[in-house]
Image (cartoon, rainbow, N blue to C red; front, side, top):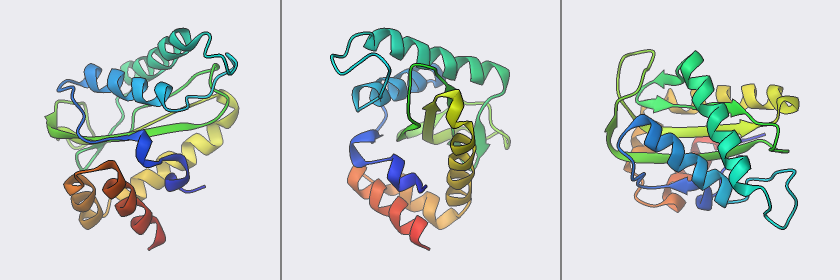
Length: 163
């Protein structure tokens, strides 16, 4: 599985509007759930707010246990939520650095959020590894941060996965 298969331009927000960690996490969960966050709640949308609350709780709880700032100005917040039946991903960039606990102590401007059921834990871990390998390359990070539209961010991501 490629990250470009999980993300589409409608699952990327540029720019993120929030300027603090919790605000960014809430904004990304909102994006995830409004753009096809698949759940066991049925096609009628029932339970959407409960599912959103569950996903946000899973992400925030994971952050409390061990922050997900991987360095390079990038964070990969993630969590496991039983209401999701597939691995979900969203991404975004902030116009200015967001204070965030990171391995290298640097603030964060680029976010990739993942959430899915416990049964897909293996895919979850693989996706985090793929994101990490992509953003480790400084030219790719620079191009992703310079993207002014979701479509441009997505193109850069696809190009990075092809090389």
